[in-house]
Each structure stands twice: as structure tokens, then as C-alpha cells.
Image 1 (cartoon, rainbow over the protein chains, first blue to last red):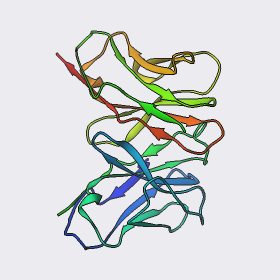
Image 2 (image 1 turned 45 degrees about the vertical axis):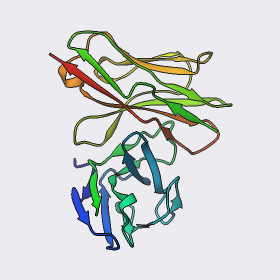
Image 3 (image 1 turned 135 degrees about the vertical axis):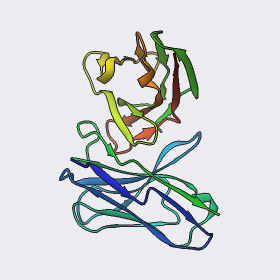
Length: 115
Length: 113
């Protein structure tokens, strides 16, 4: 059982380049999330998808776009990468959009460096 | 607005010693509280959670946490740590009437032999 799978694991981009981070879950979860993790700042929510067909902004959405391709897949796109987007990106999923009874399941992260 | 503070960025401890990782929160309404653990090169996983009821919550791997409403704290404890407990630990808070989950900045627990 793979859980939440993120690709790629590592990526280096030049300023202005674009890329898409892929995420897929095989737990039949309804809700999916993208977080970024920066030293001394914990995890911050970029975008989420409460259910298939919906997406919403989180705390730090600027510079990103998302697509909920189907129930399994939720991608994050950087249209024009900036050094401030250097971070570790985590995809997560939960059975329902109810954090009290639906714990988050995280992928292993994508380490992105923008030069 | 809700917020969560983990005052200790790093906690070094010897194997088999007890440990406490501190978490304080700020909120004007009832909250739900969580501890997540992140092992090296992995994503986070839920360690334990407090929703209501008993203020002492037991989680996986021998960890427990106590909700203290008067001190707005939710400290994580383990009576005897193992090398394998070396990880980063995140406290998180969610207000009962919102869909926001706010993470603290994390505490890196380093267990030495």
C-alpha cells in the first residue's frame, strides 16, 4: 500500500522556469492538500481540495496553481519559479475534510531549490 | 486568531531518559490539538490527538500528551526515549468552528546513545 506518492523527490530550477509537482494517493481519500515546509516556519498550507472538483487557496497561494485531476491526483504548478519558493513541498490527503476525525497522511516530500 | 508556539527548536536527550516537548496555543474558542512526527526524509504522521474528554491522551510509540486548558498547553511526553525516537515533532491546533489547521514550527528531538 503506497499511501501518498510524490514526484519528483528532488528538483533544481532556475528563476523563471516552470514545473509541476505530482501527487497521487491510493487510499480513496476525498481531500488533498499541498504544504510547504521552511526552517523555523513549520508547515504552511498552499492550496487544498476538499473534494474532487474543488480547489481552494490556503495561507500562501501566491505563485502557485493546482489541479485536482481526479480523486487520486492533485498537482501543484509553479508557473515562474522564484528563489523564495525554495522549500520542501508536501502533499497530504485525508479521508474527509474534517481534521478532527480524519488525520492527514503525508507523502515523503519534494525538495525544490530555485537558483 | 489561533496560533501555536513550540518554544524549543531542538531538544537533545540521552537514550532511556524522559523527555517533554512543549506546545502552547492561543485561541479564544475551543480547540482540537494534534502532535505529528516527521522521521528523517519522510512525511509527517499523526502521533496523537485531543478532541474532547480525558485530558491525558496516549499515542503511538509510548508517547502521551496532556491538555491543560488553563495554561493553554499540550505538552508531549515520553518516560524513556529510544534512539529511534529521533525525529522532528510538530504540534498543531484547529479551532472547533473553522477548517484551519495551524502547525507549530517544530521541535527536533535528538536522542543520543
